[in-house]
Amino acid sequence: MRKIAIALLFASALIVGACGNTASKKKDAGTKSDISMQEQYLTQDLIIKIDSLIAGFQQLGVMPNMKAIDEGTLVLTDREKRVKPTYLMPLARVNELITLNQKSRALAVYAVDREIAQLYEMPLEEYDKVIAQLMIDTDNVALMEGAEVKVEVNALDVDSWIVTMGEEQLGKEQMHLFFETIAAGVMESLYITSLDIPRYMTYFNDQTASEVSYRLLLVVEGIESLMPYHPELESIRGIIEPLNVINAINVKQLEEQLNTLAAVIADGRNKLLD
Image (tube, one colour):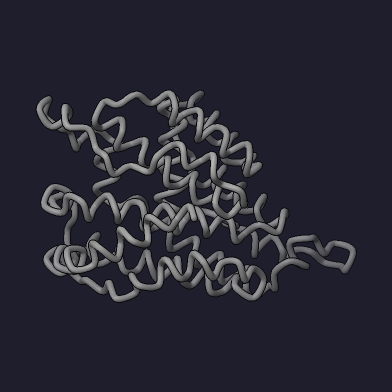
């Protein structure tokens, strides 16, 4: 189950993929009879724009401190592990979730939290059960298959199954859920980072620090582009919007801004599953 969670972490904090080569595939459709549900759902221009946003996410990858946790280069002492974190999202909140929007966000939140739980050597069985159920509830077939492939080959092929997931969401007219997951993963990762800035900042350099604001920009662009089709995205936009002031170009500035915005980040994070 660990490898499933790793795959989920990439899907939620990477966060990433969607339609990949969808736009180029659409250009090859020659006649009206070839027009698919995807083309009826979003305009060609918007599909191309989303392709561009996804390319940006793929280039950014995972935030460096989260990557260090995943790869095992960030470790705790035995003494630190004895003090278990109390800030993780309660697993019982999953029982309160009703909408697909909420459940899509929860997938990201619990995937990130599971990595922290593992860092502290906490039990993971309940996380695995909750995450598996959320994948079923959101009918994220591509993500489930991607997790299975990760287990079988011990490698995450982002360029194949992540692209498939995006195409799947387009076909089901649910591209907004993809950005719900992206936004929640970014918010949860920033929240975790803001709780122990001195520790986590050591894994950033000036380049990766400057990419935090770019990551947020891509999230906002995706959400705002889909708002005319999915006005329910207003909720997640309102949660992410206060973070638009993050514009750090180096580690020092990012550290200062995260310290300043810690309360704002915590407030937004606590609203993710509302």
